[in-house]
Length: 380
Image 1 (cartoon, one colour):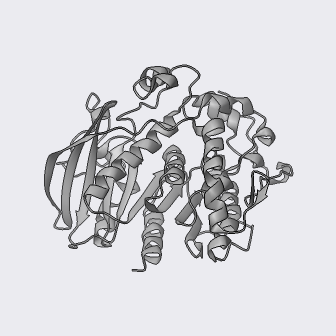
Image 2: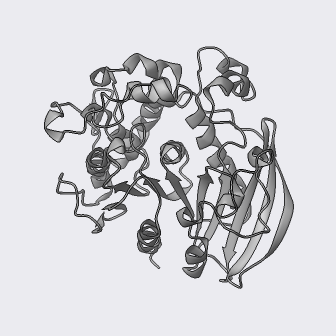
């Protein structure tokens, strides 16, 4: 897929019109009850045009695989979650505190063993046949020790356990979820990954976690936003470098665009999304509406200065415009549409944003900001 046509010149961003958040179905939204009565129709539009149908909720069986102490910082538990569509391993780290402040939940890219050098971590089902990923290879992205020291728990599972990130496998695996997903791609990979997060939340609720905080990076940031838009159990949602199809506005046509997504990753979104290749202006939605579907819960969006492909300004503007809806709950919106200063988080009520130096990644600086924001939201 040729991506040489990507625009990185702000002066070439054409004027665009965003759908009015405070008007749905031709009627003004003036109160939280107005919004609640209309939000389901907006969710239906996102299913139709972007993410496809959510896999049907299925029963699962949970069984303990392993548990033990972890570096005198807390303890570890590994749970086998068995679904009709397959198996996933949920890795949970608990802090020493008798009652954790809350639990961060996120999908990982390369298997549970990639998030920390801990030799006791079992290989995720999707990674058991490969040996190319070293233990702790992505430890910087997870900062397990720091999270536990701050009094929080962490839960993670591999995003490919139930649905490989592979366009050739889409139809086969979609058939595992519902027969009506087989032709026309009525669902999508992001829809399945989002559903996996909600299934993990089902188990964590059984562990008496009542403060679940969802985190996702890159494509998994897209999945985290879609999961939270549909599932109100997530107290806080963090979308890190989520870009096009995540927090960034489509209609800016900056960096990655719809035809880039569909050309390189045709399985991420539903089939109908391809109708908007090079036609962002025709899409009846934009991502400020997706972020608004999380209201009035807490939401934190992040960008990286060198990650122009993800359109940092578009990510911020998605949150900026979504903040208008939070006024219905008496919260002050963001007042400045200009990108905030590097390494100076911009916060208002239950909304937060920062942009840092560097590339497309999750860094220890990001985690310090996430944890500080979690403290703010939970009143720690």
